[in-house]
Image (cartoon, rainbow, N blue to C red; front, side, top):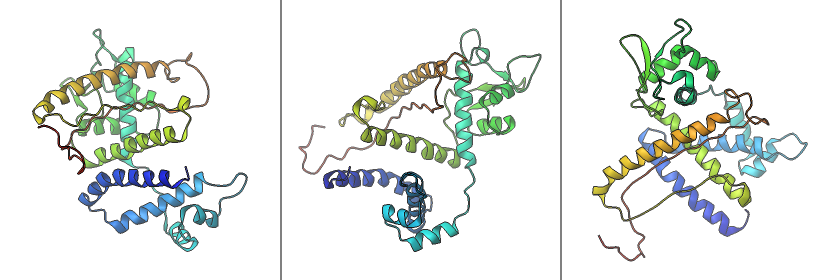
Length: 285
C-alpha cells in the first residue's frame, strides 16, 4: 500500500482514530510532548520487531530508515528506556474476562437452570469453588487478588454465607479509571489489528467486520434502542462464548490441534450527535 491515494486515506483514518483518543489524553493530563515520546518509542519497537530484513540483525540504521527517526534519537530513547512492568489493570482484565467466560459455560459452575452458581471461595467437601475456577485459567495472579478486583469493579459480590456470586455476565467495571482504561488499551488495539488484517489480506482470509449505521435516529428512541442492543448483543456474545468454549483445548482434549492461537469476538455500540457534512442536503427533522 505505497500509492499516494492510499497513504492519504490512511492519514485521514489516523486523524479520525486520534481525535477521540487525544480528547481522552488531554482530559487525563497527558500532554503532546508525552504523546510524542510514546509515539517514538512505539515506532522504534515496531520498526525493530516487524521490519527487519531476513537473516539479518536489525540495526539502528535500518530502524531509522523505516521510521524516519534519527539514529541519534533512537540511541537516546533506547538508553533512556527501562523495561515496562506489565499493567496490573491489563492483567486483571484478561484474567477476569476468562474467569467469567468459564463460569458461564462450564457445567460444574452452573446450577440446574444453567445460570452461574454462587461458589464457595475455596474447597468445601470437593464442591466446585472460586479458587479452583481461577486455577483452571492459569497464570500467576492469586485467587484472592482476582476476587478482590472483581468485587472492586462490581462484577461479583460475597453472599452472607461467604460464597462468591456473579452479578454481571461481562467484565464491565462500575468504577475505577485504571480498569476502564485497560479495556481501551486492549479492545481498541484488537479492533485496529482486525481491520489492519482485513486491509492487508485477500478476501477469503479476512476476519468478521460488520456494523449497522443510521444517521437520523430521534433522541427519544435511544433508551429503547440501547436496551435492545444490550439484550441482543449480550445474548449473541453468550452464544458465541459457548461456541468458543467448545474449541478450547484447556477444556476439551478432543478439540482440534495446531499452533496455539488467540480468538477474540467483540461487540460495541455508539450513539452521538450527528453533524451532516457541509455540502450535504439537510435532512428532515
